[in-house]
Length: 230
Image 1 (cartoon, rainbow, N blue to C red):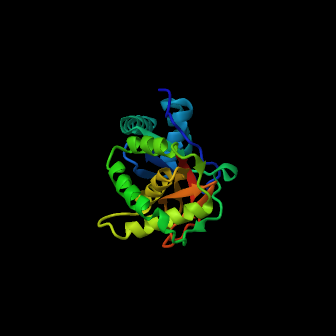
Image 2: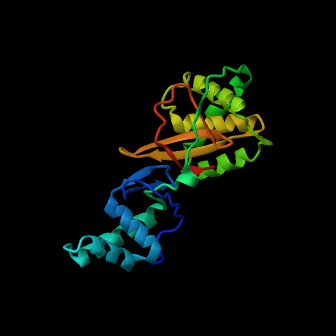
Image 3: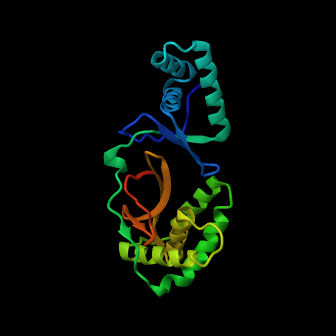
């Protein structure tokens, strides 16, 4: 076994757990400390390395049982095309800057926001890896990064448009719609997904020049760190 591919490290978490993101479905999975250790060691040296690491931590557990559990975990990860995010944060690389709350009511983005929200809802019904590809392709259409004032106006208009739609229109849908609104305006916004701990919470938002731009009705944003950006 060559271990787990496509790993993104997040250094410096307060505990040894972690999370998984399935690029095929967009679903997150929380790991306890034992599962996170096994994933790290599977990636670092393969099955036997993982078995030794877990066996060293829990010397009273039968080695054959550890090996079976590690092999089953590796098979499940391979079957589900999971990307592993080890449960730690690099504070220099992953620190999220103080966000801006979008309160600008700029009507020039109204129609684009409605169209972008429809497009986002359709795109998110596709396999998640396609969603990421489409988001990256449309984002590349922008000739310049949207400044924070433009971003705030786009996010605000998307939030208003979301209030007109039936069904679920939460952070994932609204943030992608803001990215599409920017693309329709020949601008670029980063689409970001992140995680907060204790308990695990998963979120999506947009950033302008590394600054998060959040809807006015945003819940507590403290504690989130960046995991994936497109």
